[in-house]
Image (cartoon, rainbow, N blue to C red):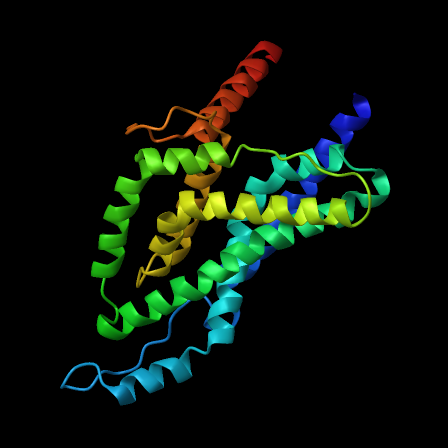
Length: 255
């Protein structure tokens, strides 16, 4: 039992530390990789020339690098529980390998989604540069999706932990498959929330932090029957408030 607790604690600290490193990179935004660079639109409106200039200013490699960093920074804390599950069900010599395969499979799903997201982001910035309208529309969609039974189904499936083989290629396959399936359910639940910050002309970092908080909180909630459910799913906030109250009470008792 003590060994299991030590493993779980080590995994939590390691993943949070790696996530923090990615957050630092995102917040410093080297090379402006987290912003779509705009070009001037002709008086006639969007044109082929302005589109070519926009694509030149925003290479696919830069867009996908920024997207991948954002996914790793925001999503890694959500993977603590499944990685703990993987490590507790693997031999010591296979734990790191299986965890990496799981994270690779999970991230690959978000990267595929990133190509679609970035194409949409560039297109909307081309048609409506520096406009809050796309973000507003996606925000409304995200709000509706947030309380929908379809999203609840995806969140419920995100709690599924498949059986894992212990040896050989079967173990590698299971870890990778687990990551891919977990990524699919996560994309289904959080695609609108992830898209919203990317469309904001300003306040991108603050929106990313808020979305991360929401996505971690809803992942911590227990599965529910899929129906329209108007709940903010702020379990993480409730935990933080409870911890603050406990610490304040302990401090008062010491005094």
